[in-house]
Length: 242
Image (cartoon, rainbow, N blue to C red; front, top):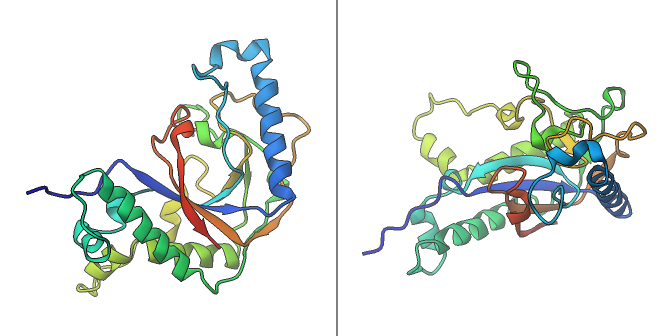
């Protein structure tokens, strides 16, 4: 008998996508920063050993990121909704489709999510408070306001992603649900937009400003593992939430 278990290392993320033409503009800015970084002799020792000096990715604001698929549902839940598999690895993809369906239903009549930027903070690299090291995915960031629209969308996504664990914990009314702020990752601990990923603190052009604020009406659910600069090229889209 094959024992099906969901992976603890495979992680999914939910991204808010900007509308066009802003999305195209942000993609162009990303490509320009990557190109200039690659042609700068000062960055020679910081280059990653891949065909691209720095990874490209779809412009987005992460609503909730880096959630282990095993935290979203149980093997029994997947088996109840999807025809059982004989291959162990396939259950994670089935679970991802189940979670995608949950998110699509949860946001079906939600409308847009406002992404307003904190202009006075500008664009900067987030550093670890103790070591001063720049985190690879917070090296060229602009902070997004914790608006009512944004926080409500986080709550809806959190409920859809962790539906199984919420149902389990509901048997014990004394157990308090974890705070939504746990999804804001250090060292920045704020919702944000990243123009580019990289370990170089000098990535940010002097003229770079916060993006235009936008309302997102489209989201993407992705596999975002490995969670590293070198791993970005392996990230894959699971589906869209419109």
